[in-house]
Length: 126
Image 1 (cartoon, rainbow, N blue to C red):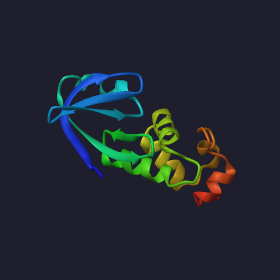
Image 2: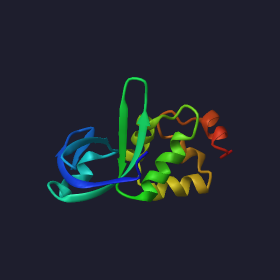
Image 3: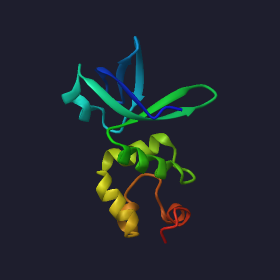
Image 4: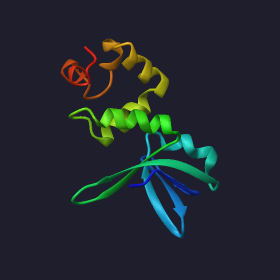
């Protein structure tokens, strides 16, 4: 398990970024790759979450530890996987999402993919 990676940002695509560290280029899935554009060819520190599957090892990256914490909270809900969690984070800023969760703002939270009343119940919101 990794906490973060420090290295040079060498590539940005529509779905991921590549950080070179120790002579290896790590593909890191992020919510909004283009939010890293100002950091191209610079040294960066990206907070990580690793997912190991039978057919793949995936890295998910975040600008801040708070963004990572929101992601981990989201994937703890049954039925919300890493890709859906990234999509939710990409749609909204973390402050808005955290405020909605803290205030049990059901209408706000139901605008995200795969978030309905049943899931909100599992999330202990209603």
